Image 1: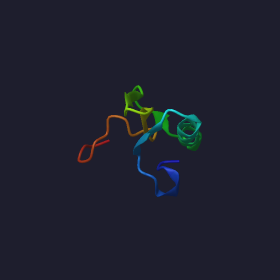
Image 2: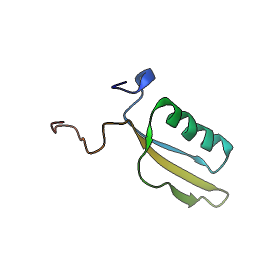
Image 3: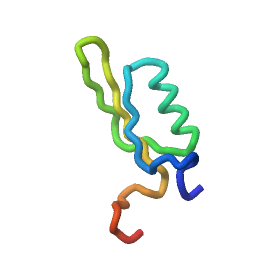
Length: 69
């Protein structure tokens, strides 16, 4: 598949509390075909740990708008 399904963007940053629901969202994106892009980041909002994980559609790494593929 050349483009992500369901009209999803090629780059996504998934965020949420460090819980099973967040892990499921990342797992679902990986099952669709996305790849992890970089390491996850974590912060504490005073109540809970919040995570962010960047994901990218395969074949788009290193591509930015306006550059040739």
